[in-house]
Image 1 (cartoon, one colour):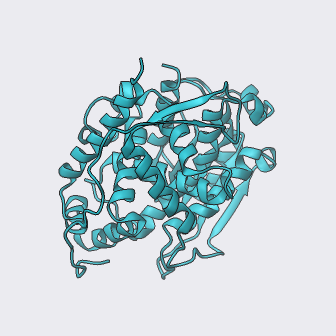
Image 2 (cartoon, rainbow, N blue to C red):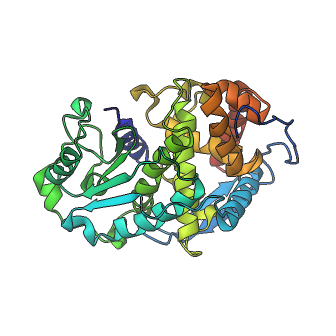
Amino acid sequence: MKIITKTCIAALSVSLMTTSTSIALQGSPLQSSRKPLVVEPTKVVTIKPAYGFYNPPVRTRLSKSEVDIIRRLQKIASDWEPASPPPVNLIQWKIEPSAAKSPTIALGIEAFNAARAFLSVPVNDATKPVVLVIGRSQAFLREQVNLLECQPNLALYKGEYLMGATICNRSVIVINLTGYLFLRYIGQPITMAMEQRTEPPFSTTHYTLVDRNISGLAHEWTHVARNRLTDGFIPENEPAWFREGLAEVVSGLSRVKSSNGKLPYLHFHIIRLRKFSTWPNSCLASISTLRSNSKLTGGCEYLKGAVALELLIANYGGLSKIINLYEHMRESGDFFSSFKFVYNMTVAQFEARADTYARYISQVVHYGK
C-alpha cells in the first residue's frame, strides 16, 4: 500500500523554520476583475491569537495584495455551502483512550468536520469508508492499522508514525498526537516517556504550534477529499506545491468556518504564513522548483504552496474552480492540460504570478528594518 508520509518529514522541516466538470466543460477566458498584485499601500495589523501563549504584540505588515486576498478568503469561509453535503456514515473513528479527551483533538475534529464540507462530492458506488486512527502511542497506531490489513511502508521513518499520514490508498488517516505535541526536530526519536507525558495546556504552548497541531486532521482530510474528486486517480505531474498548498489553505478555511468567529482568516494567514516560519527568507526559489516532493525543499512546498493556493482560490474562481479542475482531470489524466483548460493559463504562467505574490510578502517583511 502506498503511504503518504512525506507530510511528516516536511512538517518537521517547516517547524524548524520557526526558529531560524468533465472534458465537455468549456474553458472560458479569465474574468480579470481583480486588480494587479501590488505591494502598497501596506497595512500594519495586530492580532490576539485565540489559543496558545504569545508575547504581545503579535503584529505584522501586510501588502495590499494580501489584504485583498484575505478579505476574499474570509468571505469564502463564511459563505461556503457544499453542493453535496458530506455523507454521515462513512467515517470510522479509532481513538486511543489517552487521546480521547485532548483539547487539541477536540478542536481538530471541529475543523475536520468543516473541511469535509469544503471539498464534498456526491456519494457513488466507489465511495469507501475512511478510518481515522488517532493515538498517543506507536503500539496503538500499529495495532489499529494492522487490524485494517493495511501494510504501509514505514522504513523511511524507522517504522514510526511521526505526525499525520494518509495511507492505504488514502482510505486511512493516522494522527500521532504525541508527535504533534513533542517532536521538535528531524530525527528526534519518539520515546515511551513522550507517549506518557501529559498534554501541555494551550497556555504553555506557543500559539504557532497550537495552530499547526489543531490543523493537522483537516490537512490530512483534504488529501483524502482530493483523492475522491478524481475517484482515486492522482496524475504523476500534479505539483507538490499545489497538493500541499491546497491542504494548508483548506485546513485554514475549515478552522475559520468552525471557529464561530474566534479565528478570522486574517488571523490564520498571519499565524500560519507570516509567524509560523521564516519561509520568506528561506524559500527564495521559484514555486516552479517545488513541483516534486523532496527533502531538499525543506517544507517550502507547504507554506509557499499555501501562498500560491491563496492566490488561486481568491482571485481565480474560488473552490468551485478547484473542484472543476479535478473533475476535468478524471477525463484528461493530466494535471497540466486540465489546469490550462479550466484556468485558461498554463501552470508556468500561474507560478510566475504566485512568485510575484510571494515576493511582495517577502518585501513587506523587511519594511522598516
